[in-house]
Amino acid sequence: MIHNIHTILLLVYILVCCILTVVVLLQEGKQAGLTGAISGAAESYWGKNKSRSMEGGLELATKILAVLFVVLSLVLNLKIFQ
Image (tube, rainbow, N blue to C red; front, top):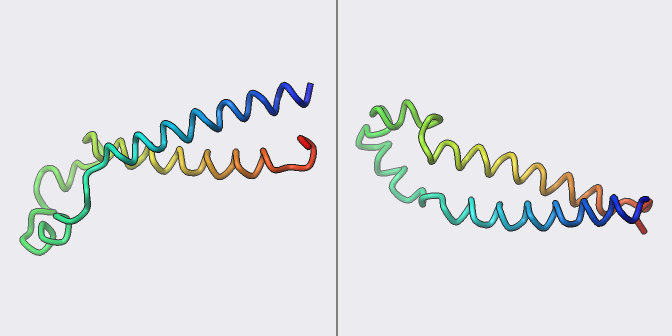
């Protein structure tokens, strides 16, 4: 029973790793962020509604997947699975 749970968690862990990698690679670079903030572009429509944009969704997905990655890493290293 515990072996089955470990196998399922390991498969979920691998899936989370792959998705996290893709989501991070899809994000834009932050190099233009400083230039945009200095010139006032941060107060534009896109700056105010960033959470509704695709970039905002990717950032949220990255945060959720990163937390899930850490939690699964800790759970998979518990002594009950060894």
